[in-house]
Image (tube, rainbow, N blue to C red; front, side, top):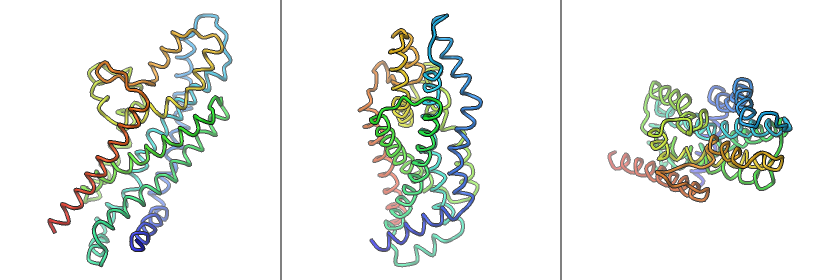
Length: 298
């Protein structure tokens, strides 16, 4: 285990030492928060205000809290996966630079290398995503805080589960990358596309019925729904307490993808956690099998 610990320390240290990888991963959540609040905040706010009956008076802070929860949940849902890919690029860079050849020629066993890459990626990603969570909570404290202690605790669990999911997925995908070009291509696709297919940038309820069914098979869809549910639950309850009709609140919930429909069946929150956990084990299993197959081939 001392060998694995040394490799983990080496990988984490190299990630934070690489200014390009580190600052890209660190700054991304902050940039997304600024862009979201600047360009999308007013759009979401106007949408919710338009859904209220004409002449209905509602404290503006409640709407701000609801919009803030939607923005923060989107950032966390995306960052937990994109940051995992960014921090896991070290595994590919070792292949490109030839460092992996030196490591495999040493007494280090293949499973130790794989374990070290995975754990180092997990640690690095978790540090940055917990920082993003703190940033998001600080933003909600400014615009409108309606989170309970339970909500904050559940958000922490959501971030940890999504980081495990993102780390497992990135480990499996990046294992098959061997060149800088492949690395750049995958990074671009993940950064640009993941937010859309997981429902973070645009609610899945706005897509066509066929696309909704396809996206209901993707684990990331349920991760976004979990984070969003815990970010806006308090604000939605505040709407009801201030006299907003239940039908309007339910319509807002549907527009936020707080529940995911799987071929006519509503997926409950406990089932969403199960789906993510099963996905984590499947991706990790694929990563382990890929390493074993490569070792046998050698």
